[in-house]
Image (cartoon, rainbow, N blue to C red; front, side, top):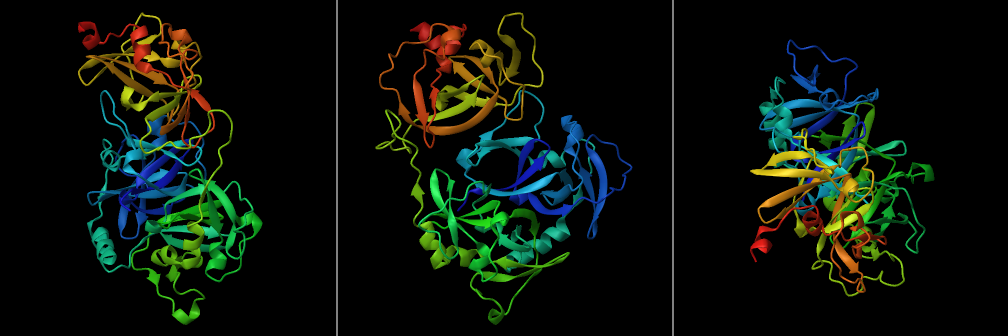
Length: 478
């Protein structure tokens, strides 16, 4: 698989991600950081990291966050072009493999952004912002240090196959480590359902990606005592090609570059030597390192993965997607603007973060104007335009940029939800066009998106742009 793997981070209410290629390791934050004779926004101090002095950045002051930081924060070591800094975050939430097609690029009318992209994670479609390592290391006045000696050592170890990037997970009182390359994503294991598959290592099934996926106890898989019922709280998803399985875990501990610290275990001392590649020393003991290729070729896991079944998403008039080839179905961008809405993706030229400043406008419903790529772009609150009260701006708020001829308009929406194929549309809609902004929702046809049961209005933003006064010069000329 070539899809990029991201480390998932939490900072206050923000869900962040960092490409694993830029995440060297995660270490506990010291009780106190040493001051540096440098003053820069966000620079919190420095800490010792083996043989280097690591400058540490805290984004909370830069983002104006007023929430109280937890006591058990960690420092993510961020690497770019053989330079490193430390980034304070509240927690590491796991890893996720994200297809390039699922990344939504961010852009701004002026200045630089700390985030380059966003993607939607899990069944809840939670927006996650991808940090730009180059921008983090390029923060004005913030020093970085060379990582070349350590980087060379890690690269040499990788060449000999001894330096996997590992995800450490806790299973009850035991810690296990998995090669990051073996992991598809991580998820909260909210519901464990009984199944005909429940027996032996299989604890039941859970819903993931619109399918019933078997959940396996990794402890019994390698011959250790089984997880207790209260210990099953999260899951690590493995994609085995023929399907997926979820390894049940209690929680995620950390991500780390193991270097050459993985020690081999004599085969006679392991119940499943084909699934255990070694042991890793920890501060308070050691953990088993599970073998990624061994997991992907295990017959029992392959058999369970092969029986993933599609979830029944309901029955009734108009909610069946039978016969619809979703790979050819039109793609829609889904969002909220007072209510949940969807718009054909080909109507949206760009998805932009909210502008930091607007040139004010005296026109009702126009929040202001920004300059973007040589265009003066009026920005309208879509919620107010439709007769609703907009929500407070949040991390997933954005502008949907719509273009007619040589003119553009930005519709400010409360939250971006995702990009999904359409599975059903109302065949009996009368097809009348939009003539009034306040009635745009009532006059829009209803559609359903793949994997869901809820019907949402199919809002024609190009038609709405014409209603509010934007002209299509090509149509005008015709």
